[in-house]
Length: 148
Image 1: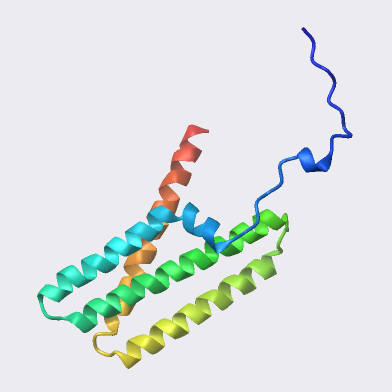
Image 2: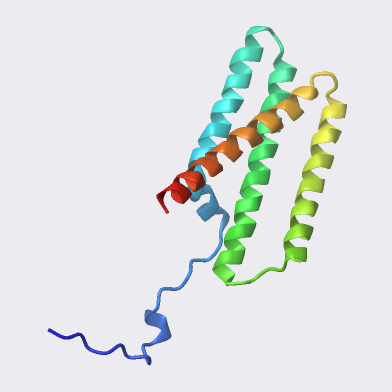
């Protein structure tokens, strides 16, 4: 049995179109990391709350929240690039990353100073979340590379 030759004049509407980038799509794709952030926030209140350090627990949870916001903003930016089919230059990628990290740093340091000395927990929450998010995104990539 032979296959019919592929007709190059196939209607463009029949071709799969990439989805539109939306925050809902990012949240659905990143649900594991959102659950980890929620668990870290709850753990901060559970542990620090037992010692009566509610401001510290809040600062840690806010740091985790800032880390999650940064992660979701990065994923949204990447999804928007992929769905648009753009080929960003290195300077565009560098500029976007630097602006996002500058805003994150300014907000985190400003809140840490305002809430000092408990504000140091904000930086701790941000760092712990970033480390866990890095591991969660790197491990699947390493597994994929190992298969090849």
